[in-house]
Image (cartoon, rainbow, N blue to C red; front, side, top):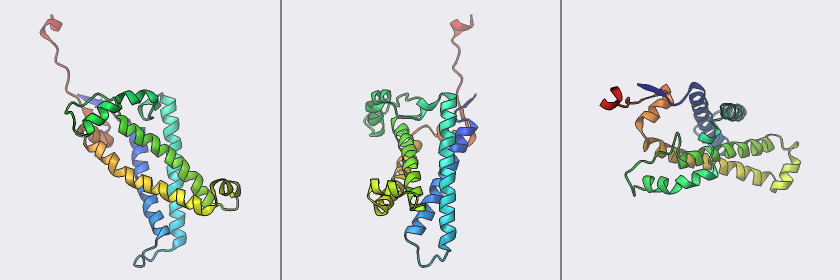
Length: 201
């Protein structure tokens, strides 16, 4: 039988984030180090970068609203109670044990990445705004040590996203393949539990 694992809003938020983050990384790379063989107007690339940034911010706001409204925020946020699962998580993903623990919808590593991504989007939003509106962000520049420091922070946030994508993919592909398929279809195929003979009578 089919079991709904990822509802439509979850899939929509996921793939919107994938598209916006990849677009931001590509346009950001272009703006920071424009290749000589690629002649594109810088103004257009800045507009694209800003537009995808707005999409990412709106997507995060939508996710926060959805998970708070449905009460499912504990499924994606790394909470103190999740520390209890850290040992079994490390033992399984370091191939010390073959037994797959029941982490729930997401394991310790996935929750850690999701929580860090939310924080990273917030930092990228603030630093991106400071660079976009230097005259309006004078106070923030003073607090953080100037626009150069803000650019460095923004750059390292991009590096974090780039480095965490392979980790996320590793955690995805080492889980059940059905869960990966569910991010496209929403459903996983679950075998029905057989009814014992004594339960029939």
